[in-house]
Each structure stands twice: as C-alpha cells, then as structure tokens.
View 1: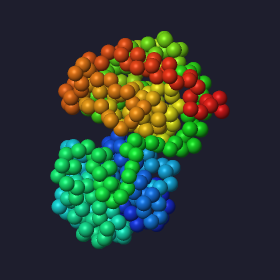
View 2: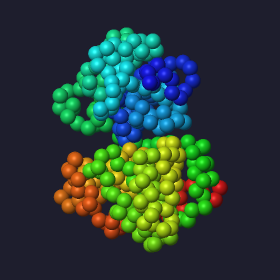
View 3: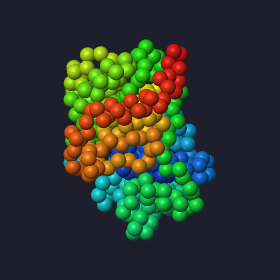
View 4: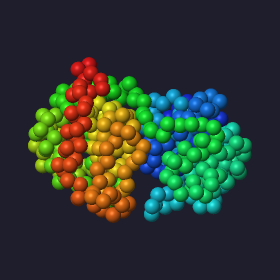
Length: 342
C-alpha cells in the first residue's frame, strides 16, 4: 500500500507549497496543468508538491517538469475497492498527520470537499486556499473552471489551455523506435473509461484501413494493458500500416502524439494528453459533452449533440471521422514537428 509520505520522483527536501488535486483521471490532471504551473510560479521557490491519486499517473505526467518537486499519493479507494489509509474519519486524521510531518507552509486545494481543508488545518498548514471557499454559483462549474476562478481570487490570471513540454529523452526514444514508419502518422486513442465512450473495434478498424489506403501512412493504436484484446481485433481487420503501442509511459505517449500529423480517439485522458501537445486532434463524443479547452481539438458528436452517459457513439460515422482527418492533413505539412530521420 502506498502512503502519502512516499516520495515518488524527486530529490529529498520539501518546498513550502502543496497542491491537492484528488480527481483520479489522467485527463483531470491534464486539465489542471495551467493552474498547477501558475501556482508553482507564484510560490517562493517556483515549485510545488502535488498530492493526488495513483490512477492519475501524475508521476509519469510530471516527469521532466522542473516546477514539480514531488508527487505524493493520496491513498483513497476507488469504486468498490477496499478503503485506503486516507478513507473515512480516521483516514482524515492520518492524512493530517502525514502532511504535518512534511511541514508545508501553504496549500492550494483544487477540490471543494471539506475533508481536505480540515486535514490541512489540523496539519498546521497556515496558508490555505481552496475551491471550497468559492461562492455557491461557482461550485456548479467544471473543475478546471473552479480552478481558474480560485486563482483569479488570488490575483493570478491563467491561460486555461493545457500545454505539455515534452522530455527530450522521450522524443529521442520515439525517433529511434518508429522512425522507419511511412508518413503521415495518425495516433488513435482506442481506450475508454466507460462503455458509453467507446467507438468500438469495428469503427476504429474501418478508419485505420481507410487512413492507410488513402494516405499510405501509418496508424498507431494507443491504450493501456486493458485494451490488448481490442487492439488485436482492430489489427486483425487492418492488414497493413497499423502498430500497437500499449502501456507506454505517458511521456513517451505524449512524444508519439506530438510526432503524428493527427490524433483521433475516444473521450479519455489520452485525448487530453494528445491535444495538450498541440497536435491537431479529433475527439469522438457520443456519450459525453465535448471538451472546450483546446483550440486544436475538433469534436465529433451525433446529430443533436452528445449527452453524458447516453451512448450514441455508433451515430458518429467513420467517413465523418476520415473527413475531419483529411481536413487536418490538408492544412498541415506531412513532415512532423521533428525530423524523424535523426
């Protein structure tokens, strides 16, 4: 079991500022990147420690970002899993004790739950700022909107569009591994956190085949280990031009997405990651509303628009997706953002 006092990825020594962002998804953390960085820049030493849940893969996301000093884990259960060290009333006391040991001077709480504010107060953190203190009307907005409004109350103005600085080592690895694949490159995010967000193997296979047939390029299927069977079914229906790259570290996924001329995928954390690299992206929103954060993201919805948890993914036709990708390729040179001949 991993506790809050485990240092994930940085040197010994604690900066004064803690940020608590407990939402568990990769996309949740990507949404908050502009605000986390702004808080770091406003802190005394230009760095923050982030407290979050393991499922966010924040240790991978923040690798190579010098403004993040540490990532430490919040041990709270997800779904039907057994309770963690920081669950329940006693868990709140344990969290307070763990934070007290680190002697933070200030905390930003990007969540409205009172338990985090209470634990930080009990931990003796003198300067506490959190979205729970915003007016009631603000509490009904999206998490990234609450973060924006919170920072505004502290005199910090932030561009809400997430952007990711790519580690040079990850880019070099992509060059070495995939440099022989023909252009143009298309990254495809095949995973989905919920069934109502999944476009399906048949649609992805038809799209991959159409892309390779029309462009002569390469398709990369991106996902986690849970997408292995799905990827195999897609590959089985696309005899050429398709590579499966499952369970790569997030830094390498980001570098691969940045290397591609386009990205397309379900509404997932990987879609957010790809869009944050600046790659022209197409999101498939048939069971969740589109994301408003990225100017380089085109959203495809069923007629009349998507509604959360209502599965209409099948109403997004393959040809419409291919048309969106063709429009991107028409506007963007075939050569990627770095020279793959290196």
